[in-house]
Length: 210
Image (tube, rainbow, N blue to C red; front, side, top):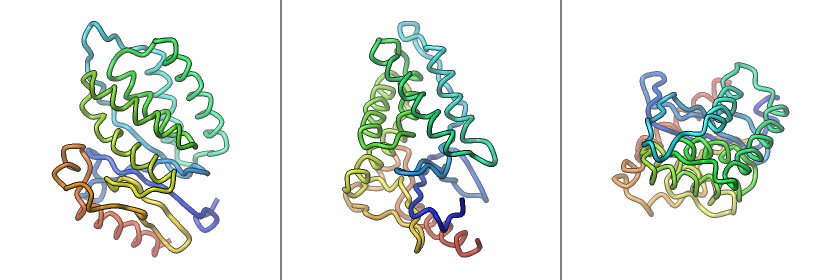
């Protein structure tokens, strides 16, 4: 499907991946139609003995990421698979089978790939538990899921992690960019306003070259 037929795209930016010498903002998921991927590096943190990692949750997360790493993604298939993954993760969560920071971190990514505001809000709650259980890198997904939830309910994002593609170009709006300081963004592993502006310009330049 060509970009011109897709009214809106969303991108989320996370740290740690470089592309063209700059931080690369990993693709995330469209609210209505998925169009891009949200990748995650393999940096699983060892957990304390009292919080063992659930191998099924790890496998579900691996499948979620693998579906987004192929060159030609069949989004119709991935959407169905995503729904099945969310259903199973919800069952594991309700049964008390998620324990470690990694478990909740992985679950947050699965729910971030949902399609409803409630999916994004649950992803945010899961990310907070991941941070509390020692997964410090979950601060970024906590910020991104809150931004996505806010935009899904018609409110401005506050960190600036979400980019939408409309027919006339890329935008972060609505965005209450002056609510948080860059120091707080940095503490949450979110790029500064200046870096976000650079990324927006890069996306616009790529659009012009299509």
